[in-house]
Length: 341
Image 1 (cartoon, helix red, strand yellow):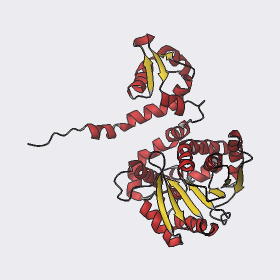
Image 2 (cartoon, rainbow, N blue to C red; image 1 turned 90 degrees about the vertical axis):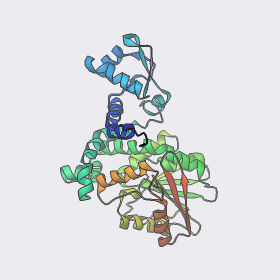
Image 3 (tube, helix red, strand yellow; image 1 turned 45 degrees about the vertical axis):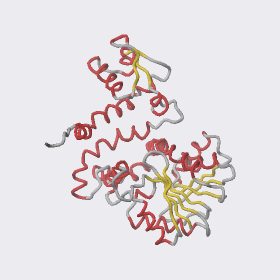
């Protein structure tokens, strides 16, 4: 007798874009922010969000069924409310808002992932460079407002990982930290807030400097976290006890990954440490589905860029001269890959 099997898992994945786009549209429309002050009826949300009557209840009740909204009562009298997760992570008034990455996914990645098959067959990126002849970074850096939106999106999704790093890694033997490609300074700020003895600097391109200064000031850390300027292709890294990179290495091909690791090694004293926060893929490449799919996203975005395993990181770091490495799990699929000089 054949074992009982079901297509449920296949269909859940195959039609997963139904749920994905429902959430992305809800973030785009501001559903969770609209419910920030308390429950509202479907009719009230329809008016506030500009929904069509045909769509209102199917849309809102879909969000209920997906566990993204709560509802008190049934029918037209029912009142929709945020779940705890929605209020914390999806309302724009929350300090822990992560909707920026979902806004970017909705505006960019959702459409680019439709071309995954050509990416798999050609190895070529499928983003702005395919449409307009410019890379994603060229497009971003040409528009300060869009760049700030992108940095905000990356900061929101990485904040939990950086806070976990500040909590889990023992910074007590070190005094200085420089975060290379620090964007809005979230990693440096997280470490500085948790470890008052640390002298932290967030270093990035000149166009990013005012964005970082505003973000650091908003956290009340202007006196604790410096903002530096570095072109990590053209410049040597500042000397520091700790060199960090948050979601930087996966943006590049193998040669550039090794170049960045070598620059980190050169900037560290004996006993210093290099930390890369990434969605580190498990060595057997069986478990971290998000990390593997993020590597596919790097294919779509950059072609030759890729995410990597802990074993890969160890190989590259030992080749650069580091003595040993370790992997520290952080939040969700992310880890800190650590190399000691």
